[in-house]
Length: 336
Image (cartoon, rainbow, N blue to C red; front, top):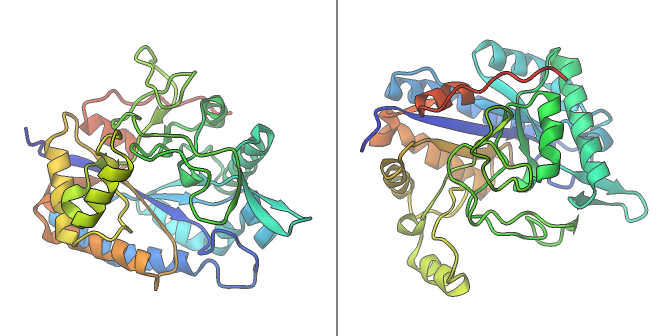
């Protein structure tokens, strides 16, 4: 069954170009300016193709890494205040993107401290206080960095006012770190069999839905599908050999070396048409605009207006998107 309108949640993480910031005098925020300008130019094409307004979701870094590297957790807010105001006035939504990086003075290095509940709580408190102080309201949208999430942190996010979290990436396997050589504690959860549609999580396991829940935040997983048709044959063979018992679906990262933008959107369209309640959720970041990863992301999104799927999608906010999917609207959580 082909659904006439498919909601799209495009999450843009606004953060330093470097994952481990060591020089606050470098132009670490250059990716923010570049991605805002690029999406500003692309937005009218997307809107003309779909016939709908384009609403984007921007996620800010305001955690202790930003505080240590740039002198204040709200450094990006202060630097880009007029840009953020313009995005909000234009109808976009602003959320938070929290990483648990902790600076170790003795080692003069960063550690992604996943296995430290007190530090995670400090990172959340720091980020949400910076947001509330700047915007004068609670933050309703959130994404942890590196698709980390745990059941223990869900009540904390709800208390802060979060209504929608985009951290879960179905099909992603457990790992110690995202990038080789990074110091970490604990590990990133295994989302191999996580749900691929919005759900309210179980209090015991963030990867399990609670079918009895009628309130609380929604987890909106990023989109995942079988990517084989859009990737080189060598990848398909290698993946089956290395992971013979894993489900075929994988997170649909736009920065991957897809065979072509057309192949990517053909694969996405097959995923949409096979879904009972279709939606799309992607995450991109303000990386180095000259890097191959960022160039691939741009090529993918710039091709969407030329693909048949472009006339069917609606770039929108989570609450409106859930309604399009036939799910009940999320209740506003009490301010906390």
